Image (cartoon, rainbow, N blue to C red; front, side, top):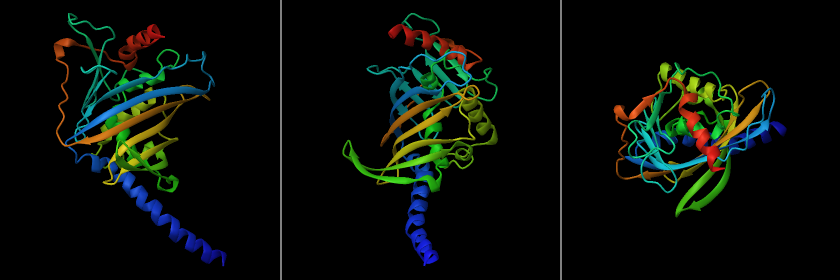
Amino acid sequence: MTSAFALLLGACIFPNKTAAGSALHKAPKRLARAPGVALKVSFASRMVRQGALTSVPAPDPGVSFSGVMDPRTGAASYAAPGATSPAVVFSGNRAFALTPHAGPKDARPWLSTTLDKDLQDRRLDPSAIPSSLAAYALRPSVVIDMLSGALTGSIHEVGRSTVDGVSLTQYDVRFDLEQAFDNATRVRYSQRQIDDVDKLLEVLGVKTTTLDDGSVWLDADGNPRRVVVHLRQSPVNDSLLLLTVDLRLTPMNTPVTVTVPNGNQVVTVPSLFQMLAPFKDAMESKQ
């Protein structure tokens, strides 16, 4: 009787999880059919455990942007709330950030670094660089491709809701980042590209060997409309911060244009710390 019940239970549950897993894994590929995607994104963090951190990070006020992305190439640009001109641009593995308080007469108002395995950083100290400033480095395409690492056995369908007139289905899930980029469906990652992403995550204190909780909302066509992931940061032994990335996506019927800053306007730096440090000062001046 017990055995028969277990088989019946498995027949009722696992096909649903398998179908949901397939939908989540293929969602980035489905999104790539759209000519363009409108974005809203926020990054926020909180400390769970200090561990061996020598000082407690100050409360993180978080960072929010709106923007657009070409889902095929991953090129994207963000504008600050209330602004129309881009303040952040992602092109390939390059990130560009408009320096705080940049004026119209500044000759080189943009900072840039290459987000690859040659980054001259170890792990960023959250006391020196607030974790939410990862918004300037963790491009939206990488967050979307995390869906390919959704663990099928962890999926829980929460239910349906209507957002901005669109019917969505919410799934709670755990993400395996070690598998996500090996199995990406939007684009195929080369080993070099996987190494580059792994290096960036390492600098941010995110271990790909741990599982990260999150939620995904899919529309009736299988497009991801919202992705929330709580990345576990452990910059030093026994420490734990949760970096919450909340990415909202709206497929568009028209292509988007992402303009990369002219090279004469850019100061290129070899480390992520050097690119982000001015934004910490600007963040503190607003508090």
